[in-house]
Image (tube, rainbow, N blue to C red; front, side, top):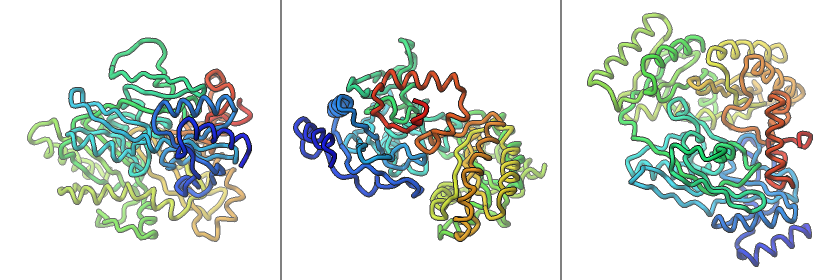
Length: 472
């Protein structure tokens, strides 16, 4: 062990206890896509905010870099240490969740699992809408640090919109708290908004106050077969005008996703009588509406068939049937991991540019290689696409790796041409720090680096995340 780490850990043992430091476990050893290996050997696990403060203050004084980790579900390498002298910091022991009946708010510690938060809200007759594929293992601290989105952003917004208050520890050990359940608060800068989405580079988030909502009662779910994304966009625009914020989710899926599910052994029930080139999965809240609202929705859906915008429309009736169609969307990211992508994209675009992007990206990539297949899916309602590129066969992987960086740049250039973003909900992490320099506005980058160096002058928090070595 490095001598500086040895003395640091000895200090923590005296101040916090012998259980404060442990070896990095297998769940933190590698990123979910298997591309990045965590080189940190040790993990510090505090039990409260005061201990986090002690850890950061001492690490800052000694110049020891800390890498905050949550459930290790992040897809851009923000939780991965690049060097052995970097130490992982896990808040998994800080997992308390309380619900206030008076104001229907959740107070959570950063290590709380998202699925547990959702369950406690549900048991209290409320709904916490953040919904992502990794919710069974991701932690709310990581969700806040990356400003997680998911399938319900269309109606409820990202986690930044769901958070009323936050507590965090700065690199120097100072505790910053805005744990006030206020919907209006104009007392100076929005520190909460700054720390959410900062990916552990400015502070370590320790607690938060979260909003909950009335439970959506019996949402109408429908899955629609369409020929191309342009038709899906027309359907979305029409439904959005009619249903407004009753439109809870609007998900786009390519037929490749179904192929991957079949190849990887996922038991999903195919909803259509014929193969669909593209599918749209929609949830509409039926809580508020006239008694014949369901009939009105069905009539609108029938018009899509009459106008040849849709090939087939299925409306699940039972809860079991609804879960079956949603399991298609929820299982696609898992199938992707089993197949193994060449590279993945988490992008956002102006809605009107989505069909053009998909068509043009396919065209540009095919000019490089005919040994790739694209699985595109995402939250079309908020403009967020996951445009993922795979080798058509395992044996093609090595040949494709030569042109991987060229293809990644090709896709990102197109996103930039269409006034989009190369990071919609996953963050920048380590994987996209160079791309951030290339595509972000220089003025904004200058402000970001000024804030980073002011708050963390020694650069101990998540070095290499968001900011590359060349930026700082």
